[in-house]
Length: 238
Image: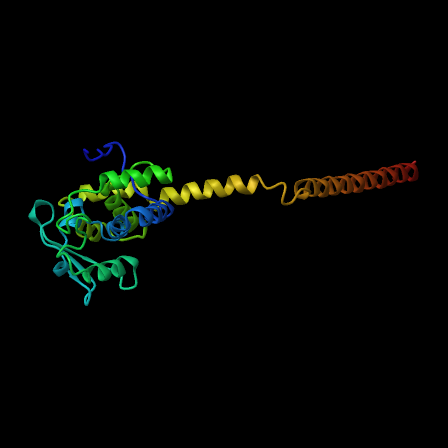
């Protein structure tokens, strides 16, 4: 089966809910895949970096994953959240005595060659748009930017050779545009709340009308008094 090809028109990433649904579905059919999904979303490792990862590459004392042969032959180090699920998964897999690999093939215990078929299966079961392992990597990068991590650090963690590659994630989570849209949504919500205060607008209008009526009445009374004064002064001068 040929790996799914990704679209060049947009960056696909998983929401937290989608990740949770995929992991839950995978845990019932392919437990190893559930672990891969979590690890990939938490480290951003590429497909071959995941499959090539060995026990000796994971330092649980310092909570680090060492990628010794990344894209272009470049090495990098990715930290693990000490209290995160990914660290727990890696720790449990290190205890597996049958293979030197963290994510070995479930059939041979040798290096994994692919998970496309099983990944497609759980996507269909959950009704989630089909994803690739690279989508899980995009998920890691997108979440870093969304959390406010600076671009150079994201570039380092992702293993990007050029900062321009990292910058692709920025437009997805631009804080200013999200804030602007949030304000617009809040405005729309505020002006569409007549049900919460059904008489608020009408009460305000009634108050204005009452004040205008009172003012008009006062003006009329004052005009009458001025008219009487004028008449009185006119009669006295005759």
